[in-house]
Image (cartoon, rainbow, N blue to C red; front, side):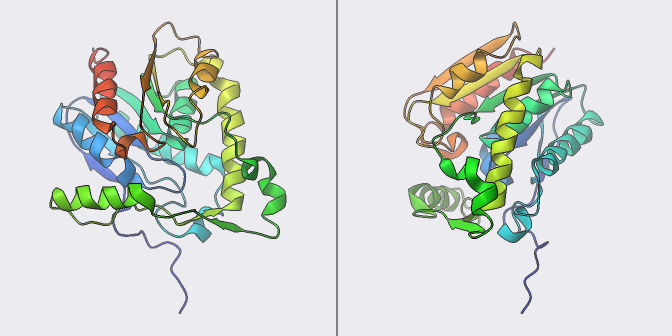
Amino acid sequence: MTKNLFEIRRGAAPFLLDGGEVGCVCTHGFTASPEEMRWLGEYLHERGLTIYAPRLAGHGTDPDMMRRQQWMDWYESVLDGIALLRERCRKVFAVGISMGGLLSLRAAAAGHVDGVAAMAAPFRIPQPLLRYAPIIQRFRPYFPKKDWPGPLGKRVREIQQAMGREDYGRCDYDTVPTASAGQLYVLMGEVFRHLHEITVPTLLIYSKGDQTVPYDNMALAAGRIPSVDLVQRTLECSDHCITQEIERDTAYALVWEFLSARLD
């Protein structure tokens, strides 16, 4: 039976939460889905914001579809979300986790949003696969994730059950397309080169407990961003997926504190 590369997986669809005249595009990370931003999106929506969480191109369907995308395709998904909220809102912010944070920063550098909050955005990470992906993909198109879905995936399911929702977990892929890892590496460099163009209010959140993106990435980013309204916040214990990790409520409060002071 031929698989449908275009079929969106259960729980991985984009979502829109209509609220007030200030909007946020909440963007998920690499190999993940909008579900990664759902709890944060609902938290902000409860406080009056309009929320749109895009499904990045090639995500939430099949890894074979993802490996066909380039970083510009992911970026276009974010720009489409910004355009959607521009039709509804007088102000639009970009909020993203990991690769979603990179894409949000790129949109801010291009002047597409009124402010940006990036969590655990990677610029330098100790992962050789990224740099050498164009070579490796010729003989190994995918890499399985270690210990997937892991403790986090189990915990997310338990929280979903406790909330009385479908327990479809994180809705992320169990493998990493090698070509996509290469595109992530290109995107990291692209965004880093444009950080000096960010002049809108900017929030950076990183965790000392992140096992994927080292904490010193915050200093790397902050040192390049000239915005006079730059806020840096630190989490102590969370691993990489801050929006679903043990300090998620703290992260939500930090994002809201930043946004609420800049709504006018």
